[in-house]
Image (cartoon, rainbow over all chains, first blue to last red; front, side, top):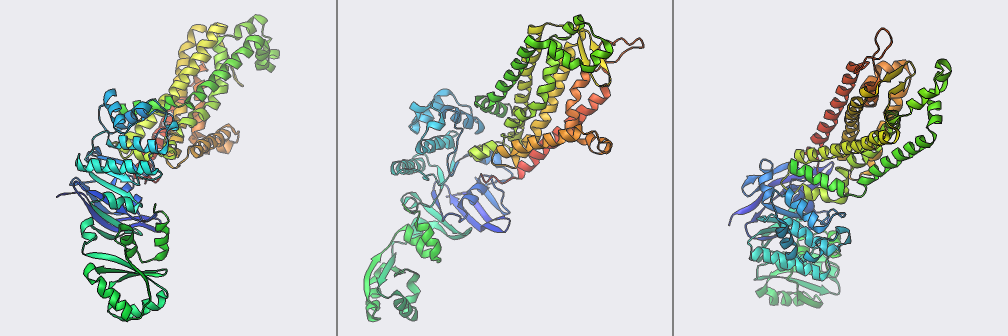
Length: 314
Length: 296
């Protein structure tokens, strides 16, 4: 399967701040590609570089096999995007907004095509209403209609679920899945909603402080044979010290609060329990935490960041 | 390019705030015309001032003086100083307003070149400026002609009096409005340039007006040192050159030469300076915008 986006050694520096630091990744054709990281990790800067809104300080981006700087127009003709909030012209109607962005997308559209597009996102009955009367969810749906009006092959969505209620989030999730499965679109979605990414992504990239932490297929990253196990104990400091002295230390991925996380082969879990007991560690609980959230926690070493990230989990 | 221009014009003329400027112009022109309709003789008396005692103008002359052409000239003298603010309201909003609304980033993810995008916005701002002037021309010139009729136009300067016959005036107004369009486009292009730096349109609008006010004060200062060193390079010095179309030459007998302009080269020189400023402001705006990171 060919890669639709190939980013190589991207750097972006704003004065003294490195927003993106030697970031390389590739997005396979037909995939839903999750782009994860906490706020300020560099997701939006990276996405803006993919859409030519920001110039990289150095590095190279190829999309559809073409250099982005030299073939910007051809690439953007085949790309649809929503960046953060779907901000639109509030004093214009939905139909007028859609028509403006259709023209900017370089296509000729009839009134019927515009109405059909609004119908697809459930806004045809509000086509003549001004955007200032729209809810956040309606604006997001119109933003999606605008992103898709020119039938792009690649769709880039930056935090598309921001500000949506549970029903809105479910609607966007279903739309992304439908576009991927039925229309074979390649979709790159950035989000901090780990649980949502877990439901839709085929592959993913996690970044932190502008650097790549991990990239790969979800099935590879979450090897079915391995699991994350969380140990809760009365005296975590003493337990951690004991574990660090023995063979179990190679399974430890992090220590946080009153718990220690292990990454271990499922078959070795009984051995882990036995060894902990033999080490006189008082076990309050030992539970599997096989989720994207825990995977992210296991990769993030700085607790402060993890806490900030967890606050945003719905 | 044409499509972009149509979109920009559509957006400008769909915004209620666009019509504030048209409303303001209409209000000022109507108030001025009404005042002269009821009390024109007093106004003419004030204009003539000390000259009246030297020349002893007849009442018939004073009545003939108050005609549509004269009223229009008086309106232009007042309004062309205020119009930069109305122009800056739209041109200063061109990029900063889009950044503030958040629509700039969405527009630039579409397959549109940044230069094309900027040109579309600049031409739309220029068309808005011209449409404001056309509106002013209709109200001030045609409206005043309809209310006060036509007659010879007499212009009073500190050093001379210029009289033009009624069949030698209309073309001068067309030329003056054309020149004013270029002068106001210069202000529009300055506001347009400042708009590139901001994410909120208030900043560029205030900055444009501040520059215009400071430059106008410097242009009006009677300080010999500034006459040679600063004034020739200020665009505000050249914005008032439209009046030159109403300054005529006289023959040896002192009679006005029909169709003449006192100093056409000076007008053309001022026009060239304004055009250079427009090119400088717009090309700088495009150059900066092409390299700008869109963070809004």
